[in-house]
Length: 388
Image (cartoon, rainbow, N blue to C red; front, side):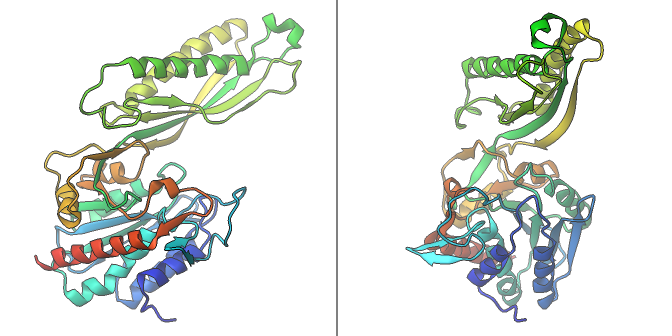
């Protein structure tokens, strides 16, 4: 098999692997290992607990400090239930666009990052590029923390981490954090005509969801400042997307399950929100137990994604601004792995080709123009790393 491939050819290969988050990504990881091996680049896997998925990282160039991490995720969202005009796992070029699942989010960037390798080696870069590919970003940025922590310990320390989420090649210096808390409400079943001696798990869950509504109202009314007004909306939001529970219309619900989700502005600590929610949960639980002592509310960690905090005189931001010429201030309300790399001590920034509006959509695409803009950006990065 030849590995002398263009960025587009690499993207075609990556997209051919249907790495939906519910499935393994190991076939893709194995292919990337073989691609790196073709250029004598040693790579390292960081597995999940059952070894069905893996992160992969590698150092390209000299083993010295001061390099740049190019970070992307390998998983994609499902296509089931979406109305596609083409095969989602085959690249189709039409009307100046590359269609396919992951073209925008974010195998397009992954392909561009991998395509830098032969260019960087030929150029003789003096500071390294570090490739970092993760699993399960789409279900809560689960894989990257393990990889970022290992890289920080075992690899030469990079001066910047560029997370290539689609930003239209703008320098995005901040994003909200995410926190999800799995909530199981256990009630006490009785016939609904005797509701006063039963405990409906659904009704009790509704109290917690109403708490979320009140928090959103309070947060919206808080005084805003320069650190919040850039976000849309400019405050922390609380949300329940799916709720399941109940047995029958004439029985008080025994069980109810949902995830209480938070999208926190970077100036607020998600741990404080977890504490506030837990306090409300215990208040409701006490009322339930007063009716029947077997009732409970059990909380379990779902996901936790730290926000990306804008850095004062950040190395990553300065680098991306130099390479793109972008001098605007940009933040986003969705979460990425950038905050996780930042938490490991890396100066971090988001910059990648494509429009986030295309992410997760049927007929997902990246324009050829944006793909080429991403390639030109990384070519300029190689020149910078070769200059010393």
